[in-house]
Length: 217
Image 1 (tube, rainbow, N blue to C red):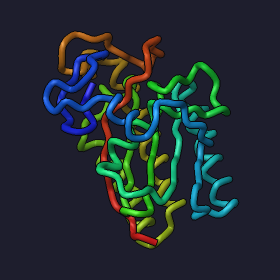
Image 2: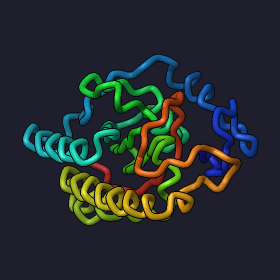
Image 3: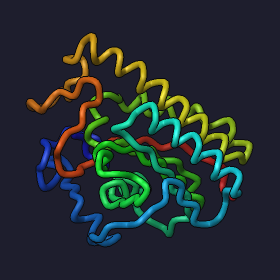
Image 4: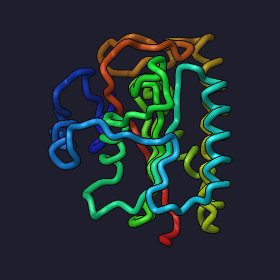
């Protein structure tokens, strides 16, 4: 997997990144080690209207229908001053508990979008199952699909564009992985290949994120 701080390869289940020393324990010390109960769309500052939340929930329903083993979550909040929204998003995906999800969608099968209204950053974090399918530049491109709407202050439609593009890319990569599973090997020491998004029974360890920006409110 990739370190959320330095984006270097980290052997699975390693206690810390050998390059920069980052560990999930560091984040637990800062934010807490307990599970964090979230809705699929967490709207802390009530920035989104009820109609916008319903529209996003509908898009997430469609995503889960198309990808029964995966899930997406959205966390929208004005975060306090922290050293890295990206590392916070990594921690949150690891510690998130979404009651509406069943056990067939563990955290390593997820994607979390964190929108920080304080810094104006949008961060996308994918779980261990999905990490080998996406290069950093590809996640960057997915986030840019929502940039125009967010630049207009329309956060909800920006998120809808991101969900749509992420779904499109997953469908494409699913087809590619069936034709050539080796293409999506991690590139590091041997780990199980994951063609067709098969579920892995492993502890949740998530990484890989990208950031974009939105106007500050």
